[in-house]
Length: 165
Image (cartoon, rainbow, N blue to C red; front, side, top):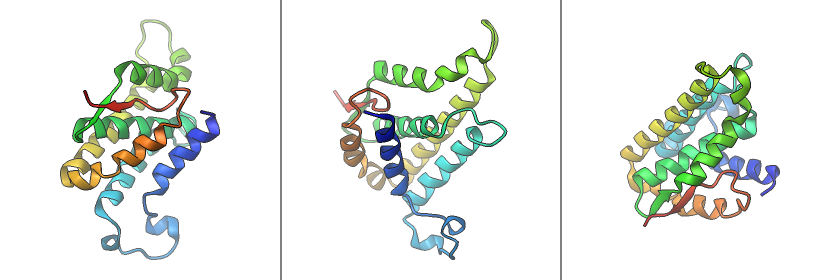
């Protein structure tokens, strides 16, 4: 899968979420937005803000979205029947996402940048787990769509999801 396809997939996953009032520049009554979609977007927006600000800019926009897609897959596997995470693929994808941060410290030192990115991953995963607890059926209903979109990832850049065994 080309990098462009990764961004298209990420954009399609995030585009499924409704715009906030600020983004739409028109008043939006939160009660009119599906609560699960609203919560997913809020959680992932906060996670991205931690690592994508002008001050931190720890990941490229593409890698930031890849991080959220991996968290989404882990949340599906942990909360929905029929899904699991291929741990070998997970490790490879996460190492690739974090690869640009590895040289920021000397051997033996703590890598604050990696800690911050993993904190954003944990924030997204935790938030998505809370969303799944709120409405498991609604949260899990997008699983098949996400799995089908990830089938295009022939280069192993974002897909870590597999059928449960």
